[in-house]
Structure formats: structure tokens, C-alpha cells
Image 1: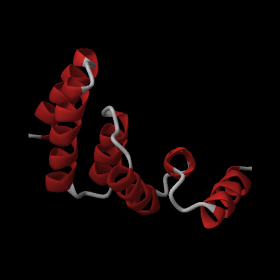
Image 2: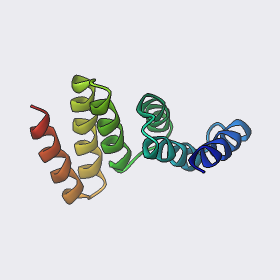
Image 3: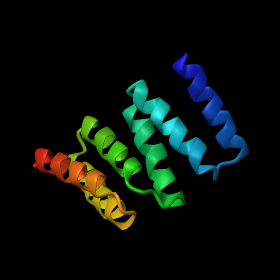
Length: 104
């Protein structure tokens, strides 16, 4: 079932590679099935295309952490803190600060 949703998102991205909502959806589906390398790649592309409010940075950090790429996960959390603060989400920023502290 998850693979069919992933296929649908990939098909939609083929038709419109700049559709950030679809790319974010694909990344979420990949995270659900623990395909962390693919999810991280999609999230990085999404973040290049969109002004994210912070959530995608947290998801990217978690994927990178699962891949053992701790320095990159730290950087993603730090970027997420900045984005969350910029968009008025202090609770999200605080969550990322706590997650970042746990990585140290």
C-alpha cells in the first residue's frame, strides 16, 4: 500500500517537479516506510524550493540522524529553529532545541 502511494507521488512529481506539496508528501511517505536516504533527498530538494516554516527541517534532521549523519542532523535542526522562529512558531523552535541538545 505504501509503495503505491509513493508511486503516485513520484508520478505526480514527474508531471510537475516543482510541486512542493507533492514533494513533501512523497518525503513523508518515504519516512513512514523508513527509506531515510530517499526521504532526506526529497526533503533537501523540497527545502531548496520552499520557504518552510520549520517542520521539514525537523523531518530532515530525524532522517539524517537515522542514517548516522549526526552533523548534518544538527545543521538541519539549527536551520529549523531559525525557520520556526521566523514564522512565529516558538514551540516548534523549542522542540528542535531540545532535540538538538539530545544529539550532543
